[in-house]
Amino acid sequence: MVRRPMMAKRRRHLVAVKRVGMLVGVLSITVGAGATSTSAATSHSTVKDISTKGLKTGWIYDGSVADKGYDEEWYDAQLYLEKHLGITATFTQNTPYTSQWTTTGERMADAGAKILYDPGDGGSLFFAACKAEPKVACIESNGVLPFPKNVVSLYDENWLPAYLEGMAAGLLSKTGVIGFLAAFSNTPAPVNETLNALLLGCQATHPGCKALVDVVTSWYTPPKETEDANALVDAGATVLGSTENDPIAIEVAQKRHIWGLGSWGNGVSSGPTAFVTSQIINWAPSLMTLTEQVADGTFHGGRIEVFGFGPGLKLAPWGPKVPKSVQEKVNTAYSQMLKGKNFFCGPIYDTSGKLRVPKGKCLTTMYIYDGWNWYVQGVKISK
Image (cartoon, rainbow, N blue to C red; front, side, top):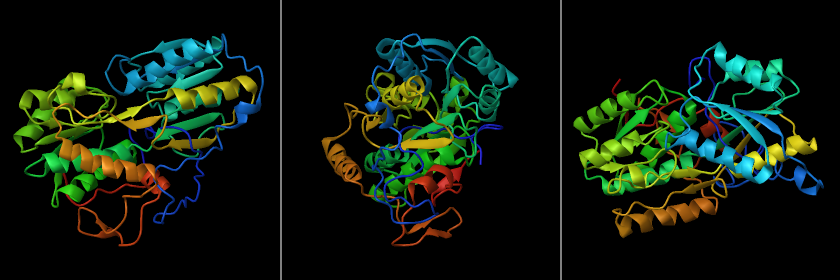
């Protein structure tokens, strides 16, 4: 299952594929969506005199580091590591998904980079560079096993804030119709999990809620996103959501006088009266841990790390126009998530009406992360 042709899926942060009490089956009762593991974060803490100053690194971005979204959040972490760990960083923007991606990584390694970071999801193109440079540590956000032994994949449980955003959407929408810009079609991460979680959250507060989905076939194409978002509003959407790297959905929502949900970062500046809330990802804590592990010799790859709510992931502040009653209802669920409650429990049906998750069963973290290759009932793909 891929999120781009030749590319794996977008992932996020710290809990190596072993979570406390988590079963990696299709369905199971889990310890809770926000639980964390310390397996990847403790090894460097006992090592003295870690020296990261001057450590050469390379960063490969697929879009602009000023996109007000996904790449910018990664770039903020890059700047943080430069300032607080003293690393040196070379980076590229708007890197095409061709062999240039691989050669870019190889050239960075040849120039002395000890770590290659891949915010842009180069997938197999990035892995090819990592295979060619086995002594270089590779950190990316895809996470489709198996991959080279020098690769660590980071991912956040973006379905948690998406569910909460959906709850707010259901409370705010009179019609229960959400418009959604999907970067690609039927890709477990982050499209399916974000869309499905958003719709389930909406249905929890507005029974019968449905999602009109437009597939953009890109993570960052503002003109097409704008056109498609307006088409969704014309089709009846009263709330707009997105998996795009940028806040176009919020900008269109602002102009069309409806509600807008963020995909990455605080989108209030893009829609002062339209913005509802979003997820905010801070990559710095995990990247600092992994960078220090490279410096002290304890880094090991071939694993996935996932993080829930905590230092690396939180819900953005509420938009100024969101009613207090909506905030209070969603904040109650937010508190329950922080305590470990799993909201992804049956019965859950797919678009054909088939029961996928029986009553009393819950989706595991790893199933949501890598196996959610179907849409929940209420999803309608427009194109």
